[in-house]
Length: 435
Image 1 (cartoon, one colour):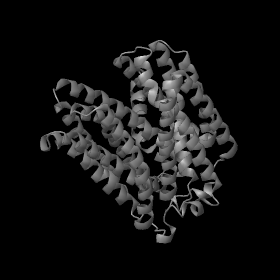
Image 2 (tube, one colour):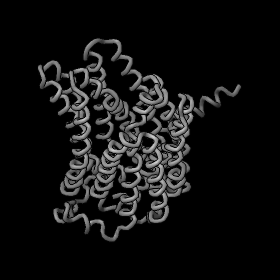
Image 3 (tube, one colour):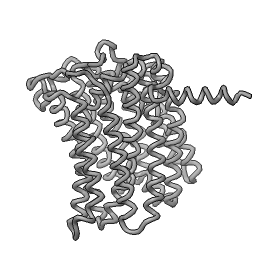
Image 4 (cartoon, one colour):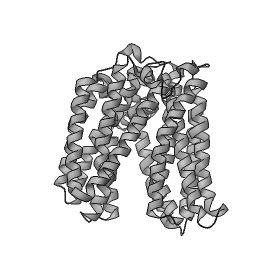
């Protein structure tokens, strides 16, 4: 019987998963401990965030919000994201103490906003309930973005360069599992209760899971003193040209990322609408197609992480970018649920590779003394590009239809891929050593 052998192998794999596999086990003890805390931070954060991402809008709708108010909430959150990323970079540069900034902003204040959402219908009444709930949701997103530049700096410090693909592949894997489980469980709980009670229960669960994430991140050990850049070196609108001067690798990466995300969001917000209105799929079928994407991505994450470490994130990202423009073209010919499921299985695999390598390439391309500022600039570019793409798509779909958006998105994706392949290089290792 080989059962004991397989049992040991599974136990070993489970033990190695929080440190990114066998590679992580070879690291020093304090590095392994940090990796484990960061892995559990991802697990609990994903469980908490997926409840918010999937159900907070429905919760606010149940409080009496209109579709206009929900759309306005999304617009305000997108604008605030860019603004808070900018201020987050300034804060991280001038104050230092990056871990503490992350814990206080998104970890404490952001998650207290989730708790306040639970009590909104209890403490407030009338028309103001909707606006107060929207305010807490926007505040939660804002504090999360405020801590993002400092969060990237902490990751740059504690995750060794040579194993980032394997570690983040492992971390993304468990985050996907946790997110799927909590989304399904929360949906079931919501249906068991009337009015807002089910939503309040799952939001309370999101708050508790968020606190577990905050505790895990707080337990990470970073350097006792983090270098401050000083007020003159801090991020500002005037300082941006000088800050980017001489860093061609990062500038080209940021600009191509902007064009790529613009291309994605030309059609991105309208896929579910198209399935319901034009293909006449039910909500359950739409959910099934989403699960197909998530599952296929999870199945390849660990392998993609190892492959990224061997090939380098740039080369693997190019491979994924060559294939991704095929996806909107495939959608033109899709008319049955099984066809969409097949497309999403293919797409989930490719997107898993892209998402992992794009983050690692961004992290590897940031100068070691400018992590907060550069990560904020990159994310601001992504956020604004997504918003612009959605605006463009909204203007075109009523005149030309969804198939036109698919073609336009595919064409701009191809252009972005060519520009990326020509101008973005594999970053030099000496520029990415952790602080």
